[in-house]
Image (cartoon, rainbow, N blue to C red; front, top):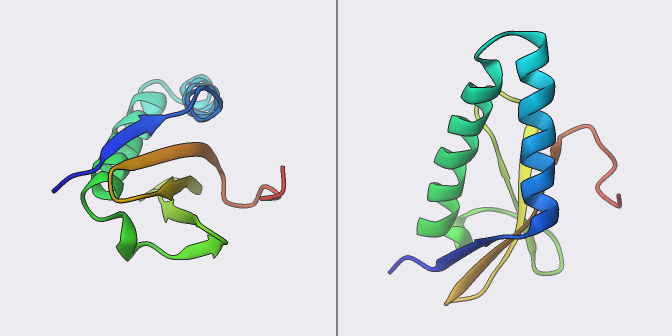
Length: 93
């Protein structure tokens, strides 16, 4: 069974900012980032428990091709995406 996936406003803003940044660097690259995020979110929703715990209940999924990580908290019924950040960024932020 697939858990319900909720992308919090802060995570949505992170994704939008990253897509705009990539799009400014190369036309179409922002769209590729969004596709990579969609694939990762689908994987998270299907099997959140297979991804590593990074802090207490927080888990992280790395994007393919882009140096970004999707951070989320999962329960059996709900997966809450709280951030999408560059992998070199300080996670305490």
